[in-house]
Image (tube, rainbow, N blue to C red; front, side, top):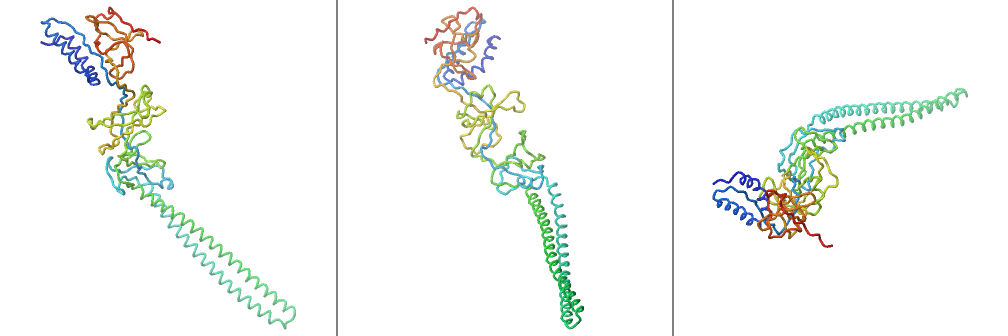
Length: 440
């Protein structure tokens, strides 16, 4: 015999809520099952008469927890950055495009290939520098040859002037017996030759210094350009990026949260291409809305479940709570970053895995609670529908903590009361039992 539509709709609407409540409070499972069974037996024993029944439960007493559930993403607390070229800024290269990179999640050994950056710009600079080095080498060689030739001519001139001075000295000595005028003329010629030789000696010293200075300047330019060429060559080699240590490659994220993949641009100011996370120390990064953030504090215990393996449960603790909210993409409300340290070290944990985090914000070891479906409000009064013998009354209650499924009742009912989960017919005609004022 099928259930009537109203009873069927009642069971279908209450079933998920009742199951959730029973799951939270296992000690009520027998009571709820008995109540449902009683309604069905009553209906089938009614000899075909159509009737409705109110589903009721007894308050549960026991452990009561208040949790905040969020979705997070695993990441390593510590990691080694895989960096792009260190000399990019010195080489005046500001933007570099990723031409090739190993798939994310690849396990690499120290020194193995990770990524390749586009070398076209640095290769062009290196070739230009090579040409400049060749040109400066030729100029340096020319400077040395010119200096050699100039100084050689200077030395020849000094030798010739020395011989000329000697000739004038001999003439002067031979003019001793000549007329005074002739003797004086010979002395003047000797002095002139001597001065010419001395002046040429001074000029030779100056020319030597000039030659050395020109050679040093040309050599300095050449060394500078060679250093630039070596910088380009080293930077070009660094465009082939290798792993600095053993680990699993995880792509780095840009400022907008997107991962750096083939075609992404790496800045010289932030040359991180990927990371090697330390999988022994993981944390879950989650974001809590501004309504619930006041409940979250560092040190609170957390239960984590992996979307990839729902049967695996992990434990954690809230390590940090952001003081300033932020606007996340595709979100209209402000959220606050919360970091949860994972207690367990598991080899199956991987960065970017999605986690369901249940943060325990409050707990009562012993509390009397009822399902939220049984709690109603009318003006400033909070009440439940309670069976009172063969009738139903509105019983005012004082509530304590609330969670997603139940509410703690501090005053108004006890464990033996039966509370309706549905609104009875004509509720406005029911009597109301108010709470007595608490004594000061």
